[in-house]
Amino acid sequence: MKNKLILFWIIVAVALASIVVLYKKPTSLGLDLVGGSRLVLEAQTSETVPKITPEIMDSLQYAIENRVNALGVGETVVQKIGTKRLLIEIPNITDTAKAKEFIGQTAQLEFKRPVENSAGVIIDWQSTGLTGKDLKKSLVGSTPTTGEWMVELEFNLEGAKKFSTLTKELTGKQMAIFFNGKMQSAPRVNEQITGGRAQITGGEGGFEYTEAKEMVDLLNAGALPVGAEVIQEESVGPTLGQDTISKSKIAGLIGISAVMIFMICYYRVLGVISCFALIIYALINFALYKLIPVTLTLTGIAGFILSIGMAIDANILIFERTKEELKMGRTLYTAINSGFERAFTSIFDSNVSTILTCLILYYFGASMVKGFALTLVIGVCLSMFSAITVTKNFMHLVFGTSEMKYPQLFGIRPEEIQNAYKAQETKREKAKFGVLD
Image (cartoon, rainbow, N blue to C red):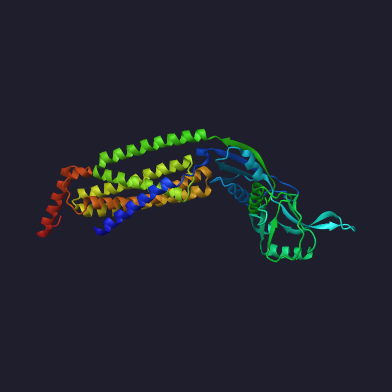
């Protein structure tokens, strides 16, 4: 009994922690609930890229994902459609202009050496082979003396070697830094730089912070492997999302209330226990959604509600097995343990089948299907914990090892128990005298 009490307080502590998480952490809502932008991007062929291959689309998808995530607007979706299109969903941003501009921009960084005429006048710039592809990362920084914003660059190993060679060659001369074809600065190189680091300033007046940040985001996201054009755009307003959330809450409350009423009416005390277990299950489940975090969409909410039904289904299997054991004349403690053991196989098999199906849906399905699969698989895994741990612990604490005095509390007619006990007593009497059935 001591171990059961310890487990009970652990369950209570987890439930309280879940309430704190629900109160403190915001819910991440998907495009269909909170509104946002939906864009369709099409890869474009060119002289250098005459054919769009699956490998090119994978690279484009990766580059676009980096760029969209750099916007800092929460969970986004970048999904391939057909052979040369990408579907991009960005929650919370209904004005697609900035997103389109950011997604479609290139990130071409070039370091060039000056070409001078006989009089020492610069007449051109010449590529050095050092580009943004040689970067490891970039950061927004500020000059310590004036506080002006600048972009700090850190080269990878190969880029650091190139930069060291270039600065040695250009010592005493200017080195031009171009971004997307526009010269950003042309600093004079005073000595060879071997540390693999450089800075870009914005010329007179320096950069505005937003300019420096945008350049950093584009550089860190990398250049697009192929040209891409936005061929379709759509703004999804939040009104539909708010209406959907309200209706989903009402539907969820009605559904859960109906299930609880049925469980209490049919299983009596066992039904009350299952309701408490269901509440704890729902708290932990939703807290996990916020901790992971899971972006809730309408299909994700459907997966959550379905997982609640499966959690109740596990309790029903356990209760029915327990009732069968009681009808066979088992003691209350033995019936509870045996009911869980006999029901576990069915619960495990059905849940594993559901989990495998969810994994297939998540891997091959569209974004909306993935939301359904993710919430359902989390709920199914948690329902096993709820049924096997929470419900069983509550049943042992409520009933302990007491005798079955009031079978009506289990939804069983008294005569069913009495007949079972009489049969067991008759069997024991026969066994005492060596009489076999």
